[in-house]
Amino acid sequence: MRKKEKNIVNYLVFIIVGFVLFNLVWWVCARIFDLKALPNPLDVYSAYNQAISNDIADHTLASLWRVLKGIAVSLAIALPIGLLMGTNKAANRILSPFTYFTYPIPKLALLPIVMVIFGIGEVSKVIIIVLIIVFQLIISIRDAIAGISKGDYHVLISLKATKWQQMRHITLPAIMPEILSSLRISSGIAISALFFTETFGTDKGLGFYITDSWMRIDYLQMYFGIFVLSMLGFLLFLLLDVLETIVCKWKN
Amino acid sequence: MISIKNLSVRYPQGVVLKDFSLSMNRGQIYALIGPSGCGKSTLLKVLCGIVPKESGTIEYGTQEKDISIGYVPQSYGLLDWKTVEQNILLPLRLKKKLPNTQEITGVLRSLEIEDLLKRYPKDLSGGQRQRIALARAFVSQPDLLLMDEPFSALDAFTSQTSQKLFLRLWSKYKVTTLLITHNVREAARLGQHILIMDKQSGQITHQLPNPAFGEEASNNLRFDFGSRILDIFAENNQEEK
Image 1 (cartoon, chains in turn blue, yellow):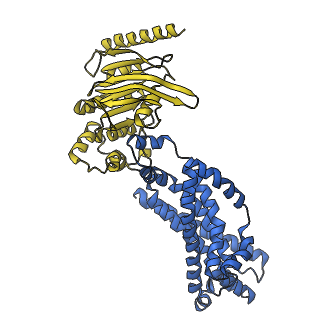
Image 2 (tube, rainbow over the protein chains, first blue to last red):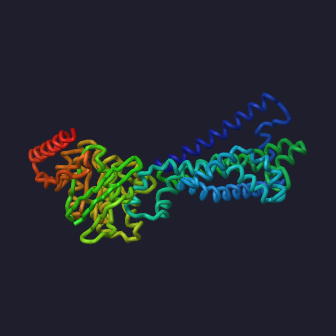
């Protein structure tokens, strides 16, 4: 078996083992507590017919679209700012205190202000996701640049490479693993934030689906919604893993 | 002729090179040896443009102009995220020159690395990485090749093989080369001219033509010449005391 195929098989085994273990723990908990509010996984999965007729696919797509927009906007903001801070000492001196000061603020607490300024529609939801993950991305990018060996630039400087060429051939590829790693952590946080933002001002999205089922004391659908939301997070992880194998081939 | 005239370099902690001058004939290898901290590596970094000079000129022929540099640092400076092929072709890519396939194949064959092109640097041995760095320096056919202790991280056997391959390639292109080394035997083998730098003055105190240059020279001759260099070092040391 070739190395690449072996890696794919190992990865699939890793996913299956994780899924089985997760369900086992869930099943054991359901048996121990024996509560209506904690159904066992098999009952939840059997409720898929009801979920389909409840348009869960539409809710999932709405959530996926929001979280992707949040991550894309965050990256579009964090990349230039992180690069500026990582490559320019003066910019870092000015922006660092601001980033450090704003990073620990619980961004969900800003929700009322965001809603007043941007309304209760789509924009507020994306802005909350962005506020939660953008600072972490900025700091990761800046630190990743600080970790690049100065010696890596020497050969390019001796070849009279322009600043853009140095950025293109050294800085960006060197920080790519850290960006993807940070995105992986951010995507988990983004999913949590997404759930929260979808509990108000919308009738589309998995956050709405879960809370709505909860209000109707339909625990099977509530758990089905939680399961799909988790799968959404897992899908993002998977996408980032695939992206890493393509973009950071040299690391494998 | 490449002439470095009155070159001075200052770091925040003090002057590293002061009024340093050196002339090199084109198509020759100069091996520069000197004690640690005498400014050898700084000299290479200034010539590469990594460290700014405070004053002085670098002339190529009769005029001051930007010369093209091939640089082989001690750690080889290969980019981990580029394949061997991408690393080797990087100088041409930066200068937007089309690669001459025949020429490049010749360089790869001389260094015996034509089978490594699709690999990444982390999958290579130290000797292979070193040869890739040499190939990258040679493909752009620079006006001046600068090498900072390029063989020092290799074991004795690999170092000897790499030096042999370097000489083989160099004899084809005859690039003007300035090589820094700590190793007297290495200098005696690779340098047509030996430059001895003194720590106290930061100047070249001796410039010797090397009778033991190349693969053909006998070990005895190289040993005798090496002893002579060591004697000069001892004298320099004595004077400093």
